[in-house]
Image (cartoon, rainbow, N blue to C red; front, side, top):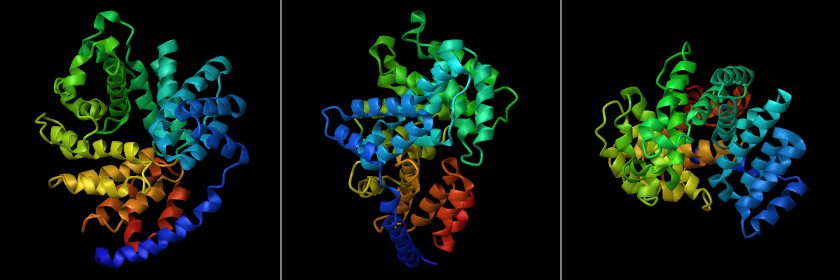
Length: 392
């Protein structure tokens, strides 16, 4: 079956999905009024921060994440800061967990790129330094939410690495190797005995550490000038098995350096000569951020994203389109990420031959966000030619 014969059939399916969305997306009146007020304010992001925090204090995590989903649906620009809101929920939840010994954890913590786990573990390690307790909690949540998501424990392990980076030792400021050394060591110790795979628990923990270091580099206080001027040079000194994760988490620093020029950023990545890295995968990770920055466009960045991808050389066009697909799963509207992903893969402006790859990449990752039941329901609405991709 050719691409031209597949897409019209799928487009009909997509129209059916979207036509029913209006009923599903109706907002509670209290949410609608509050969201409209924030949208009209001079500082909508700060306003949303207060809304989400208040929702947590009044109704717990379920209420807060329900509100986040409604804000993301009504305000596409919210996707830029959604991860930060989830971070704050993690911090607030840790305070309650420490005081009461329990929190009503929810599978909705997968919203906004799993920022909740990052904030929770960051607070736990800053407070107690007990990474073993963090690992035990991650294992518990992974088992508890396995039916809802296959990545709750992985995101939690990433959070441990995130919280393990210590920015309080003034003697280490200006030296990124020294600032991250103890965090990498802690990851190695606390993940001992767990499966060692290219993207397993140790990898997720170390990527959390590199992520946290990059965030510290955004403050002049820490004097991490190398990360600001040549972020990948630092990664070249890391263990070969850690370089991929390091480079991936230096992408925000690269984007600041090139002022969000995705072509220039791609050129920097493709020029890397480090041993032990996958440049195509790094380009894919780079273009996740395209969706974050362009989600507020009328089509959520589909047309402009594809137009940027086709400017790249082979094989980076496919890597770029994969990045857009993954970007919707990472930054799309909570619970509705798949619709934006499907719209991308069915787009008539997608270059010939790339639809199959787009579907394969995106559909194989649905279980990271959704239950098996929801994944199956999504896939039953697709042409048979695409359904096999849903099973990895």
